[in-house]
Image (tube, rainbow, N blue to C red; front, side):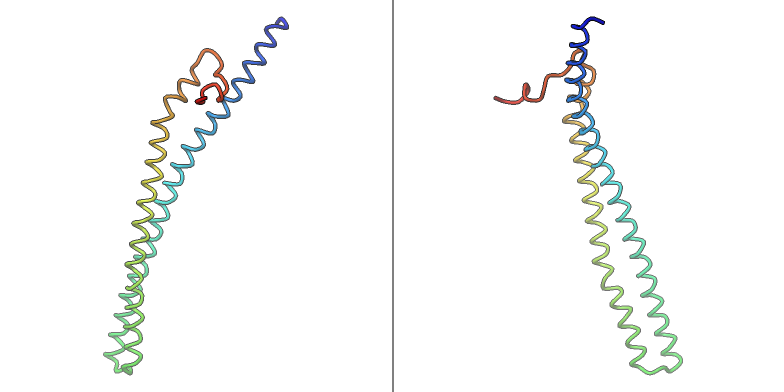
Length: 143
């Protein structure tokens, strides 16, 4: 290789480095947005699983209170069990709202990822397939 070819190759590698850095950032951003969506959907499902568990506990507590009442346990104890079950049920609406909000947020992250891919994907594909090194970012900016 002549000195001129080595110099041009070095310049091409340096120029390509900027493109590669941008491509890596683009890929990371799209991946992170998609991963955030998946994690939020998983968290939403865990909240719903906890919701079902608490709902079962409230039903069991009411059933236990009814059994105590049939065994002539004092009214205060029976009432406290019914009250505990009511408290459990009162948080269920908040848990369901939280799970729904997480699903909405997950959808927003996925849409952001899809939008980012739609907006910049063709640019990234073109930059990757260019037969010549891409110019530095300053060249493309508005002056």
